[in-house]
Image (cartoon, rainbow, N blue to C red):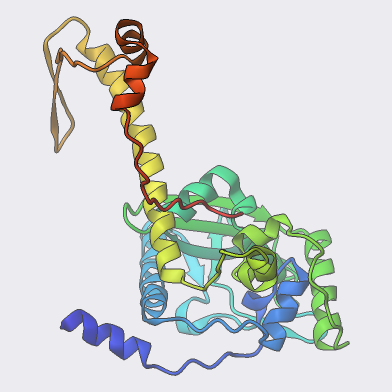
Amino acid sequence: MLAQAVLAHYGSREWRPGRLTVTGISPCPYATYLHYNHLDPDTPDALARLRMKNGNWQEKEILEDLRSAGFQIRFTGKFQLVLHIGQVPITGRPDGLITVNSREDVLSIKAMSLDRFTKFKQKGFEAEPRIKCQEQLYLASEELKDRAGCWIYAKHKDSCRPYDIFEEKDLSYSRPIIEATESIVLGKEEVKRPSEPIPLCSSCRHRLFCWKQELVNTSGIAAISLPEAVRMWLEGQFHLDLGKTLNGDARVLLKQALGDSEILYAEDAEVILSVRKVLQRRSGISMPKFIEEFGPEALSKVLEEKIVEQMRILRVE
């Protein structure tokens, strides 16, 4: 009852798309064009709004952690700077400014799921091109043109594990994006969709809008927007894959430690694992031996064919 009431409350709140800001600009001009003209509106459901609210709380905690570690941080929360980029101008609000080694740089803070956090550590901005675009546009603003770069501090939501990287200002990257945005907003340019999917499409929320026809041009195929189920499947699949990898690595270490012993107790500060050497005998029917003993005709008499309905889920990049 309580959960349903909360979901109903957040699900009933009206959502109005705002004007184009830095967060709506993409390295892909077509995505920026869609944002600016509201051609593919993104209306968050109740769970999405709860996640955004949770993200805001997590980011406040990050600021507290950084200040506790002795860093001086300015222009956060309600006192964020309002930046102006390009001739439009496009406005934006960075998370803050942080002093590291006696120099003040831009600060970006992100609370990430396990999937995002792991990919960000492994691939950097290849996994998060929107973060790079956003921070480089901030660094190209009139107000922060004297800043050398930006610290991106990410926190894994569940384990609280932190990770950070520093991104230097790169005007050669931001200028073409600003010029493309100005052409859309000031020049009223109509941007065409790319002729085929590009790497940015894999992480873009417009990918179904852009490529739906290519997905559904065959009979028996359907496409719908079902973000909750997609997110749940991705999170579950990531945990399964990660679990198999970690479990396999742990088994190798435990087998080495067990050696010739019959039982091993492995412990850390909170958990003790019991590792036992177990020998099992299993029986089964060998098809080659069955044919050799009774002939292939006999095999066909005992084989049964069953039709089993299954559902196969694959990630479409």
